[in-house]
Image 1 (tube, rainbow, N blue to C red):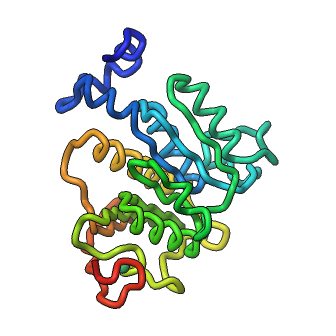
Image 2 (cartoon, rainbow, N blue to C red):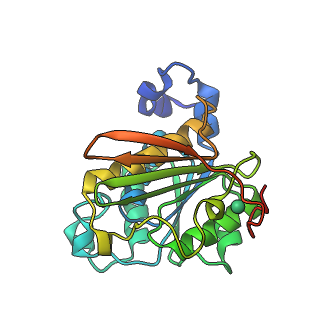
Length: 248
Ligand SMILES: [Zn+2]
């Protein structure tokens, strides 16, 4: 099912316990939506493209700025001023020309959310503001698509895995629309490796889910602190009056 070039390219991945040709081929048929092509999105896209996810749909309406470069490794100084998703798609295609990239130069909203996640296997929320996060949560819950959310600010990170088919709360059960983690690096600042690590955790979680390996931590909030190099995990109970999941 895989050709010689694919065997060569993915040889190390294929050697991993639990991997096989069929799983690699299935990865090639998967579509992953990445909303936000900042530090989280760049890191996750790099590794999902490298692993051979067949289609990456990238959603962002921002342009590259100089202040992005320390932690957004898909961009160079020559890209400042250009649309992030256009640069990211070109950069990913140079690294793996066998995958497809779909650039969506737009902001994820209530109006376009359903179309943006249609046909996707999993969605990664790599955005940097709460209104977008709630639009993504509602769209994924309605469409029944699993969602992996990450946030990073300062020296702290959060990872949330949500699956509408499982009995747990949704993102709005965790954070009301006016609450949520301080995740705007414009205000809080962030250390590049912290945001990179959280983005890679999103890629790893998505990859394991697509490959049907391990036990996905659906319904869990995991919190990382870089200073103590520690993780803490919390369950996300459904709220009976949640307007998105209705207490699941
Ligand atoms: Zn909910």
